[in-house]
Image (cartoon, rainbow, N blue to C red; front, side, top):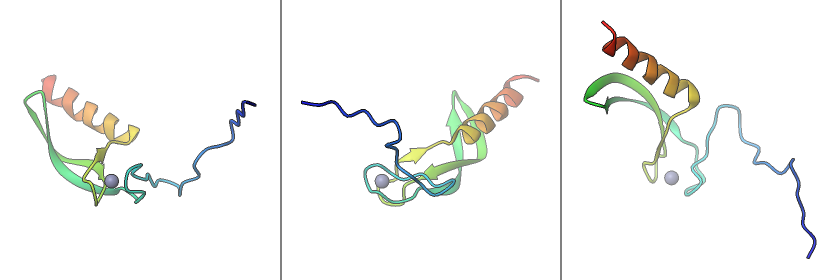
Length: 75
Ligand SMILES: [Zn+2]
């Protein structure tokens, strides 16, 4: 049985759009209050699937969260 490895086989998505793998719909960006390690972060941007409510952070959003946390922890 031949093995096909095709590195170009990737999903092509709209720029900035992330699809929920379960529902095949685009995540929408929302702002939430986010609690992490007892710290409340306000207006954190997160991508949420409108159907299954799955949440995903983009790398930029993760970075923003880390920066907010750092500012809260360091006086
Ligand atoms: Zn979904």
